Length: 348
Ligand code: SAH
Image 1: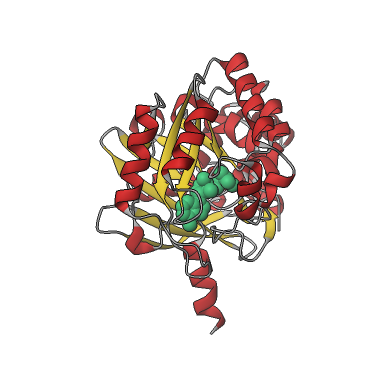
Image 2: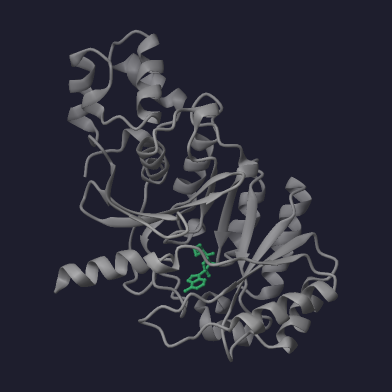
């Protein structure tokens, strides 16, 4: 693979254009063109500059391969990367705007037992520009522009991959997407979900990017957590809670927990009580979701009634919590399902 021009920050791009012997105003044209999702050969610049780019950089690092639209309007995108790898993303429409869920890796090596993204292990990290490219491609697909005319208004790093297992590229992506001269999505409108790499959570607290930090908890004791999340052997719930407290101290942002309700595993009222005891008094919010059953996995979702009872119990115990409705279930909305089914189909 060639290099990815979209990895560059605005300043780096300006320097590159200077190196190429072009006038400074070209930097702005190139930057805006890239942020509008134009392939390199379509940039409105002199042919010599296009040739300079073509020799070194990928023409179009992220291309929309397929689009699926669910009954509820949720759209799922299958993206092709320049090396032929596939990744997926989801766009959810809410009253306040459109939230895009992006992938940070091809595959994942965290091994969570309920997740389809990790079935084939980690293939490779995405570059910063490949993460950005997913948003730029969808924005363009929906005919959105920059800043005030964006079609994608919110971003969640909850697609395939563990963002903190690809730390440098993810931070670079976050700096680029929040650049007010470019796409300019504010950190407040970005959520990053981690399986709880507590060392990286602490490091991230010092980056000056006050986004919504979300931790996939899914259990109330380390033993139970280790049954579905191998990462629990590396970082305890106590480590995670202390890293969360540090994040709050440094950024002033409250943090969130994801808790997927799995029948017979973590969804009894006793679990709700234990979760409430663990989180009481902490500046946090709990997002409950019923497990999205993945066919390669044997785990089952808690039913709607259990989920409601779990939610009520948390609230009675003074915990801020919501039960999120599952969106796009009819199009394989859960992590990694689309890529997994596509790979399977094309293998046959
Ligand atoms: N690696 C990161 C982000 C990707 S997953 C993380 O672990 O947080 C985004 C969220 O979806 C995580 O909370 C993950 O645990 C959850 N998830 C994965 N598969 C799921 C499934 N089949 N049903 C419900 N939630 C799932």
